[in-house]
Length: 177
Image (tube, rainbow, N blue to C red; front, side, top):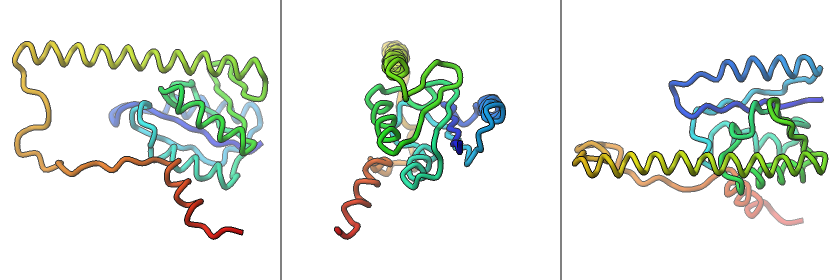
C-alpha cells in the first residue's frame, strides 16, 4: 500500500520529528510504501494549510491509497472540516489511518469513532479559544494595549481561500466534455 504521512504542529518553534519518526516506523512495520511526508507548522483551526493543500491535490491525482496521521487533532480541529476531508478521501478511495486512535474509515465502527473524536477535537479547540479570550479580556481590564504594534508594516488584507476553493475553481475553468 502506498501511503502519505501528514504531520502538523501548531507553531513554528515546535518540532514535528517525533510524529515523523513514529509514523515512518509504523509504515515500515506495516510494509507500507511512503509516498511523501507532508509537514505543516500552523494551527489546526485553519482550513487552509500549505502541506495539507498539497496533500489534497496529490490525493486528487491518486498518488497514494491511504493517509496516516499521528492523532486526529493533527489533521484538524473543526469537525466540519475533518468530515469534509475524510469524505473527499472516501470518494477518492483513499483510506484514513490514525496511529494513536482506533480510526479506520472503512468500517462503520471506525466511522463512528472518527465522528466522536472529531467532535472532541472541536470541543477542545473551543475550550482553547475560551481561555485565550478570557486572557485577552483580563489584559484589556488591566489596561494593556492589544493588537499590532504601532508602525507595523504587515497591514495588507489577507485573502481567504483554501484547497477546496482552488479545486472548485480548477474544475470550473477546465473545459466540459
